[in-house]
Length: 480
Image 1 (cartoon, rainbow, N blue to C red):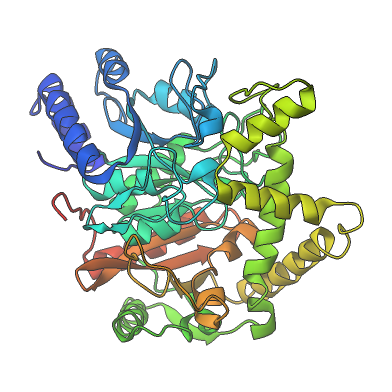
Image 2: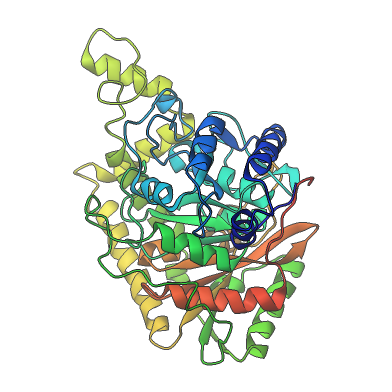
């Protein structure tokens, strides 16, 4: 079965060169094959996809295009578990806002994708249905928390999938799976109807196999939603219409505070090649840095803020208001039993930390201090954006790890800074895109491009120019 881009598939369906029923029959046969190989679905929505297909006339760009949702997007009448035992039987009575937008655009939902439990993780090993495997090598992780979505685009099954990103949960798995992953500006896309993690950091976004498709999807799901007071009132640009590969007037800052921590010589060489390519394209590329002491605060600051907000957001999952209920003789006992049974050990640890940071006696020295440090980090980023359009970094310092691998040296700058720096864009709320840049040991690697608030177009244009020069658009791996 061929793996098409959105634009290719649209033209084939519109011109009748591809029979839609035959295509979807083959698509679901492939979906079941990939599920055996990757374990990336929570639910396959075959009947719903065919119902959606019946309504498609293929006249507009997304009519009849198949896609996948991360399983924290509420879907009316369709199981939405967030890969947690606590929500194992949850069937929403309404759609997330972006699901309604995609329905209006005529897309066809083929399934809900696995994720780290409640989106809290970076490996997709904590999902209720078990780990998700990398399409390029099934002994390796797909990354998380949006690993199922990344894997299903990376294997060529669907041209796009949606995810959510709180620290790097779209961009890290995109890099591991060899696809484009984009987190737009905080507030550009409504989060109404998406099960939250940390509200001041959460951003919705997409996976595609090329930048042009990312323009199409991002425009389709962006815009003001009165049900989400944090969504922006700014008009949504026509990203594809304004896409250009001319970046000769662009100024790009290489954040050496991150790139200097690369230890893998092949990834270091690839990053240098990307820098050289951007210079050949006419961009001004210069080194910048941020204070190393501040960079070392990224992980602890993120950990405190994210887990504190998650503790508050998920206090309703108590077996009484929401969630699988366990019996008890008192309401307190019901809540204790339900939460003990319903959450994995890693979630419980995060909630304990969040409660500790939010306790009255600790708020000033933990949560409030983390917020102040966050503001210092963002101030340093804004200094860079005064002179530069894009901040360039490696996506991470390694290929996708083996399933049983663990990083023992978790206090090194290589881990604390290089493997956790993508949260910079979440702290600042800025757009951030991960773009495939090459291969190491047969596995994809990537770079990351961050831009100013609401300058998605600048990020997309830079990525488009680099993608054309590097030649890694539309890649996928079916067999690993």
